[in-house]
Image: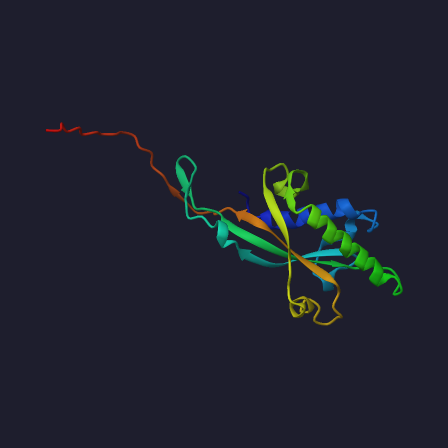
Length: 188
């Protein structure tokens, strides 16, 4: 269970995993990997962009959670979809090769490291026992191209992280049983 920062902290966890595998081998500096739309990437070499948040209905719960003197409504389970894009600052002769190397390494990394847990987790998730799956998503080329409306398409991949649980803030009082009365009748 997590508070409202869990969505941002999943993104930060993905950034942390990619940084640890790619800096300095393929990306010169840690701040070269970050959260940004691919067309608003600034000086990033690898942008991770959250583009969709969907409810994960497979793990939906309607059970209230007992918290002593109150009951909390169940958390909402979410799947978060990310677009990952490489941005090389090399000259035009080697830019495409550099970006393909970076993307190949990301695909390899997230295939081999398809669960975020333990030391992978950042922000409010650090030190928790959360486990979040990473699954490569296949989107139609037209959808991918729509992320680049005023620029040429850049090779990108999509990954879904989840399920991510966002706690409900709704509660209701719960009264405890204080007395029990039993009526026993003899069988005749």
